[in-house]
Image 1 (cartoon, rainbow, N blue to C red):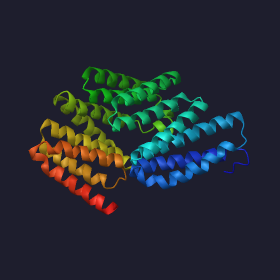
Image 2: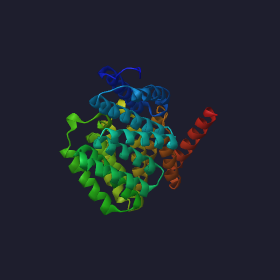
Image 3: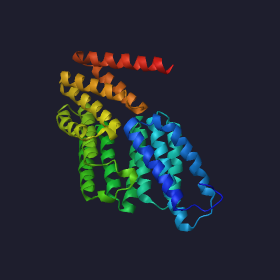
Image 4: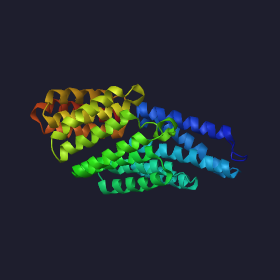
Length: 313
């Protein structure tokens, strides 16, 4: 992969293979275990931009490098490094624009929006999702549009707007049904029927918190379906869905299932190196503290957090 010679298909194939392998590790084990290998791959790949290339090869190179930086941003976000994540996403957007690949631009905007959503910066998250929708419309990519619609629905659920959340969720389902899933790019293959169910469950869980507990009854079967459908390769997504399911049970008043599911989430979280998962677990503890019958869950989470902090120091 020398920068002194033209980049060829084998170079691009190696980058695609490396990015795909790291993405699989991220889904399975979280962002933290990916950081070392990812930094090496980013460093090695950057040199390729100085190589002599044909216009067609350069555009393919821009796409694969944008995808790698997109993954790097997501991994850093998951590992609790938001400043590094934003820097990688910025590089990714520049490269995707140079490649004139609006579908990839849409996906980067989605992931950047999720960073702001996690930080509870709802207006900034919504802005990123809306920018992504514009790119998805330009590309005609219905899968990208669906991802952005259901994530926008999640923002509106957190804002307490049931009508906006429901409308966007319905739109996302329609776009999902129209999408070309057989030819989905690597960066969008995670978004299956199962993940759509998880996102709908997330929307209704937050509506249960902001609008009314009745939404928990809708969230529970959606999240249960998602959890049962995730295989071991999507361990982090399954863990995050367990957190949401526990929250919905607690809101509904089913404290037994809420605590049991929360303990399952806590156990699953131990196998995933993800600051994002740990943040969500701590938020679950906050919900559990407000319900007398769920204090055990909050205490177990607090004890696990203290033990993890002690090991890290």
